[in-house]
Image (cartoon, rainbow, N blue to C red; front, side, top):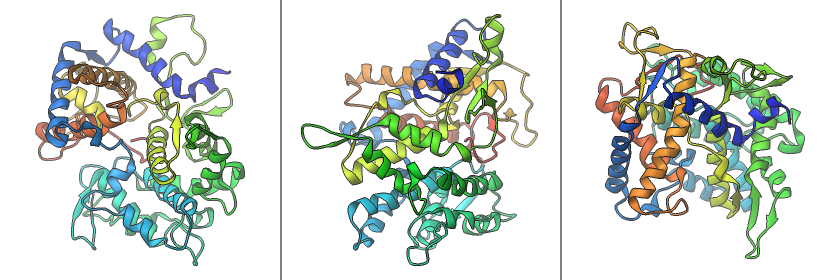
Length: 423
């Protein structure tokens, strides 16, 4: 396996982030200082949220996935599934996959100002929930379908007709309601149409994200109790290979576009004669977020079981990462990042080494906090999964702590100059 191929695997994420964590423990990072004594505060805060919201029934915590955002404020997904009376369960699943893929690709950070007003409920939503609900209504209105007889799908023809103007109008973007990364989001959807056509083995005919369930079923086995068991690696292949065309070219290495993979100069500095590419750290955040969301959708709709999920990691984005900064577990070294004159906060591009260090330490920090939470509560990983902890504690906790620290914006402690394709 080449280094480029390795960097596109799930195990590479935790392994490379662990290398960065080892440097942090020795205080050998360029931009971030690690304060392990502060981790206990994060653990206690997360446990308080779990007990507040779920009492003693922690098994009731849903897995972290797009479904929670699509159903923010009121159920939307199940009522939509019930409307599809005249199709079988597999076609319902295909449509749900179509919706989920589109919604996740539109989920990169929208900024601190943008909001979405839902006409049917009269409610106003921002950030991930706002983006999810906007995407739900765009899907419901047939914006992603090229088939006038079947508006409730996403296909190559429909996605090719997407324009920035259509996205802005559907997401209520204007001068008074600006959104970060509109062009990047639109570009992802347009590129998705090409990716679908280039990979018929995954996306069938007509090319749709939802046709991936037919590919996954061919890779599956049947357990003794009759359950369809799908390797998580098969889904990862679809997402990394099938969707490779959609990601902007950031780093091309050994003839491959790596996607959400970035250099960490601190890794290069500590080992002189290393192999080319040993300083690269993969995250694949949006792909993992999509994988988690699709696994939840397919396990719920088709009663499938995915195996091999343990190689997936917590998501290195600004909510989970912000939690560690706001509690002082991770501390930016002073005067190394420019400060935004408006907010007074440090800011950087996603490619900046400070952001790479922050994200890598977030991945390992989530593992450490999850293990400590389980130990304190006397629970096993099977009883309280990383996905449940992300949903019920760290992601939610990052948002709540941000609101305490920055009441006016509720934004992250380090501002990311998002292009709509990473965060």
